[in-house]
Length: 313
Ligand code: R5P
Image 1 (cartoon, helix red, strand yellow):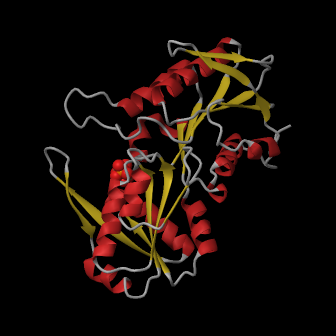
Image 2 (cartoon, helix red, strand yellow):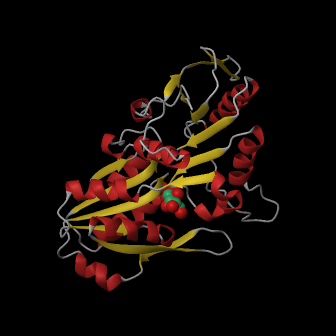
């Protein structure tokens, strides 16, 4: 069966090479935005039968990305393509994954439902904020996780005894535990305390204060690892706590999805952070080539298609 890949033309930073190496044929689309902001796409070549992987940009301009995705997928369907795998490395709206207040839209599920209604057969995403929120879709939604990628990156840069990883909140604990197991390094967990009514963060500190205070004496680098770096507020709190306790070593901030909103990079630097690195799910100045998620996504597709040799015809 022939495999094709269609990349959102605005998702420049995403690496397509691993798809080409596995014999996916690239399909180009022309894109423009009309003066009033409306989206236009056109498939430049004839659309032949096969399985199509559509890779969409998640951020910035989420709403325009979503509509461009709708145009791409629906046009493929209209041109007779039955099998479409949607790849959304950074899934927009994923944090609105439940009804926090009565009557709220559960945007994450509405978005996914919309694409299944259009006829997408699978949706692949990366380090989605809360995997459980998509359980209702069963194996149609696949979450690729980057624990190994981070573990390899950390192992290639640091000696295992001089580095420790920090989960900035309990939601990241299991992810960070896996990364630290793979890399063979220590980890610590911070906890955010919120006002139950307003959701406002009231405090942010380590769960086991004594252990981390001891670690400050011998660890040379703390890596704070999160799924999303948005305003940087969460991680800045962790960095400030470490500096406040007298930590003089390096603080690195690693995140899967680097949105860097509202001057987040400066905020992090001012809080005592020395280095930042992210994967390529979202374009930003801190994307590292070694952390590209493309290979992971190709492997997931090959595994899903039951391909034995890792190549299509
Ligand atoms: C929240 O639970 C997420 O895992 C991230 O910690 C959060 O989205 C980061 O946001 P910000 O950078 O604005 O603190």
